[in-house]
Amino acid sequence: MSTQPSYRLHKASGQAVVTLAGKTIYLGKFDSPASRKQYSRVLADFKKSNKLVANVPKSKIPSYRLHKSSGQALVTLNYRDYYLGVHGSPESKQEYDRLIAEYLSCQRSNTFGVVPSEISLNELLVAFQEHTRSYYGVGAESEWHRFKPLVKRMRELYGADPATKFGAVQYKTVRQYLLDQTLSRTYINSQMKRVRRIFRWGAAEELVPPSIQQLLSLIAPLKQGRSTARETEPIKPVTQAAIDATLPYLNPVVQAMVKFQALVGCRPGEVCLIMPSMVDRSADVWEIHIEKHKTQWRGKKRTLYVGPKAQEILQPFLQCDADSYCFSPAEGVRLANALRHAARTTPLSHGNRPGHRSEKKGGDTTPKIARLPGACYSNASYGKAIARACKKAGIESWAPNRIRHTVGTKVRKEFGLEAASVILGHSEMNVTQVYAEADRSKAISIVRQTG
Image 1 (cartoon, helix red, strand yellow):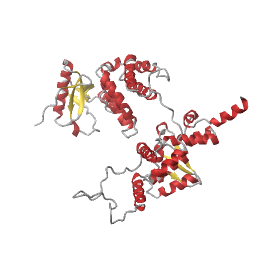
Image 2 (cartoon, rainbow, N blue to C red):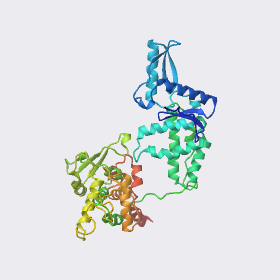
Image 3 (tube, rainbow, N blue to C red):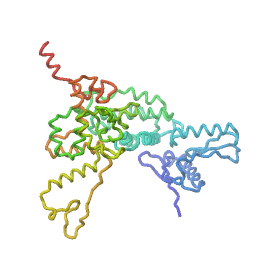
Image 4 (cartoon, rainbow, N blue to C red):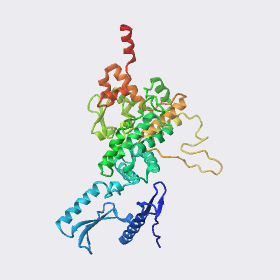
């Protein structure tokens, strides 16, 4: 016997909610007559359907049906009834098609049909997170993860309030919370930019008036030296000495990735995703056409140019399947184990057998692996491999994106800013200047002659 879904309080927002087949529905202010009435109606509709929402295909479109007592056509969207006109008439069917098209275009959002003045900040944020989840995905580098902590704090502070009440004071309160966490100024500014994006999206979906986003855009970001926010050091190129000191402590695959990146100047994420099918070897300089990259959403194409030295490094890793990743973590583990085994001095008849743990008294001797290697390295795993090697080498840790700064600086010094822009894959030279350090020696040479 099934129990009736309960009317209950959502503590963070102060709203009443009910969960039907795994879907949480916000009913309004807790214990108010309006929320009680909405609860009864939602529950009646749910029972009338005589089947769980979870068993209804996501693709099912709400039906065009007859309201017997009035003779009108009716469609129900998000538990709201829309009367379309005389049942069976062309006008009612046209109105049905229009409503369904609008409902599907907003991806079946729970806020569809809600009057902007009635939308709470909670409802706006839930709808926005559904949008970011489908738009950006939930991968490790997804923008969705960057919004999550921000959305959580906004819901804690103002979730139960109408979204239209969010203004300059509320915006600065959220920013002050971030300041109190001793976060960096650049991170706080980027998070507050995301707050503005939430309301810009809401205005585009006609959930909130555009005046809110316009007001928030007038608030100046935190300026360097004008706030209590922590300042961060600019990212500097990594020295060749640091790279050379790290290489002996990396497995052969990550070693090759570092050496390849130091010659080509690609992003860490790009070197992780190279496949043989991307490599055009028809000319003396190879071209790698990266399919997924940072500026792909802008319609930009990204090509890596691979010279003879980099070709020599990449060549052994092109023997895998065309659609497999060249730099495989599993291959890295296998090669590292092979090197350790080759350097083994203990006879095989003593100590651990290859692939087994120590045989303790009555203990399990089967191989134990904490986590199987993935299909390819990610930005995070690539960076962690380098950080572990730096620790073993006894040097300061450095991140793989600094190799890109090193290449940019070297190319700019020898061939100019435009060449550095092409190698790094930038469409604007002012971006390249962030990566390629200015040639200090040129300035010193000029001053020697003029000053």
